[in-house]
Image (spheres, helix red, strand yellow):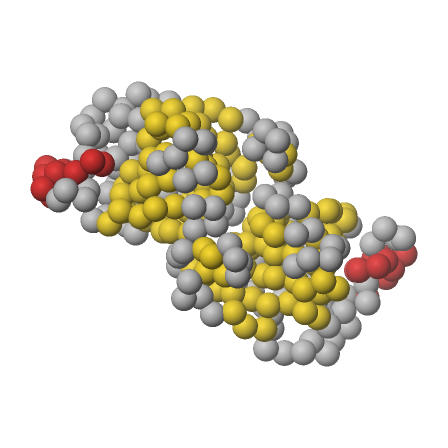
Length: 144
Length: 144
């Protein structure tokens, strides 16, 4: 798939909203995120892009996500850690680690994300996980 | 894993030769290629870099490789096609498609490559595949 640096898009790949649902459960809200599916088999490869101020839902799931930042600057909660992301930084979300991605700059932030085609659905955090994040000043900004 | 743009390397990731074996079988020679393993589970993610003039072995295998170009310019044989690669172009090698990667520029050429941790070993082409490549002026430069 041919990449076009001017539009930061791949030829023939359709870009859509991050999720079909608005995310009504606690922490599952999101803003300013698009999703572009690039490859489906044997690995699913998606490109997620966050407008300035954009953020994904705060969620967990069993399947691992392999993330490679490719555009702009981002900040992520992964488990109990906060990581800064710049192009070609690589990070994985371990099974059931709560995670949330944010644009931390003033240009678009984007990453490539590899997952298994067959995988479990994201779920909201339980009370203990939520309270744990709220109790730590480092992670509290991700629990909203 | 933190990426360092100045060295084009990832912190803590060891870079080694592309393969342990020199590749004595027909087409299996290679030159000027390094390999850096970045992630092992549940997907194996490697970074391959080709010095100017560098090329990989001409091979096939059942497992699919998902390739994302990230540095310089390259040219690849994939099956009966020749593709040009620039940063963030994405390509897959289908099961048993003969393939070979080359640096086509005068700076390093590099790509990220995702494969399954459990996979079959690369093998040389059979006579029919070899002769087919040699018979087509487009693909003949890859059969050496």
